[in-house]
Amino acid sequence: MSNKLKNMGLIGLGMVAGVAASFQFSAFAQKELDSPLPLDELRQLADVYGLIKTDYVEPVNDKKLLSEAISGMVASLDPHSVYLDQSAFREMRESVAGRFVGLGIEVAMEDGYVKIVSPIEDSPAYRVGIKPGDLITRIDSTPVKGMTLDEAIKKMRGKPGSKVTLTIARRGDDKPWVVPVTREEVHVKSVKARMVEPGYAWLRISQFQEETVEELAKQASALYAQNPNIKGLVLDLRNDPGGLLPSAIGVSTAFLPQNEEIVSTKGQLPDSNATYYGRREYYATRSGDPLAKLPAALKTVPMVVLVNTGSASASEIVAGALQDYKRAIVMGSTTFGKGSVQTLRQLSADTAVKLTTARYYTPKGRSIQATGIVPDMMVDETPNGDGLNALRVRESDLDHHLSSETSKSDPASGPKRHELEEDQRALAMLKDHKPLEFGGKDDFQLAQAINHFKGLPVKLAKVEADDLKPASAVSGDVKPVPGTQTKPPELKGAPTK
Image (cartoon, rainbow, N blue to C red; front, top):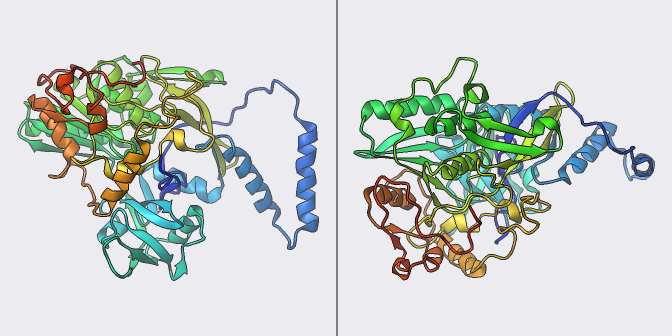
């Protein structure tokens, strides 16, 4: 898989990793150690600390040195465990609430530059015209080349109302352009909904936040008030990086019968081994049960769930549960594969450790970790291929990622068939890449979902369509029965359901 988008971040969200975790908040708890502390290694650590203090070329602040030691120790475990200092802890809390100060752009490192993956709608970056695929070459006249992603992110953060000047290079333009952007508090609205056409609804969740379940209930109720006879509903989870576990449980419960198992977790601590059901105590807020007055038709309306490589964590929990119960057809590309639980352990009033404590499993016991959710219908982002989505990394591409535990060799970890060919095709497409507006008139995958509801041919991903049986499906068109949850022909090489 291409490493072009390996290091990702969200400006203002305060996350160096581009995939948000499904958090569980917990008071500090520790399992009693089964073995004594390794005194020799601890003594060696103290010796190194002493050497730095006495021999390093210039004085080093004690707090900084120890914080970096803790940070390195936690970060070495897996890509999602991290030590949160005062600044990172504050920003993490802001991001969970869906509010933050920044520019409103999701970024990655590419060839030493900061690449725009996606601007958040109605954010400062969005309003000044920054687009996916743009490269930031300078930040306030300082060259980006040579910076780490974290350093670049820190330079773009600041107080509300303050300005940062970005130098942008864009494919097809002869000269870079310089644009000042004013930082502001951005509120990410996590749920959108509208009628795509009479009888067919689109409901998008961009991130699982504290208010997502309430927003979902309001939007779904409004849809049915507008059109009581909805014949098909598309739940759009593309590029949804995850968020809060209770929100994922609540969203799943909105479409499933009460009390069904949604997800389970397994880890070392007793409280890491749990099963979560579609019950009020697992998702309800202080204000009551936001799902109590949902239209009853929401439990039975035919559904398609759209996912892609950017769908991770909490969005994979929802897609996996709806797929296991055959409540919806999952369509798109194989998801990211972040199936691990991060628990926040507070160390002090303003510092914490976000530690991986368990793995997630779907209701049928399938591990999400490093495998992801394989769609029932593989459909590319565009009629000509998967575009930018084909260049994104997955959990299995990250250094020292956790295995799925169900297999020593994860299906998603090895070389992928036609990998080089697909990367080359995607890179060629990016030369003329036009930003995709999810839910817009040119949304190819959404159009295929509507075709599925209507019983019209669905254009499958070409590589996958060539593998389908019987031979009559080789053309890439599958004609499902409208309004049913019938699964299309099984794909070769797909993990056993």
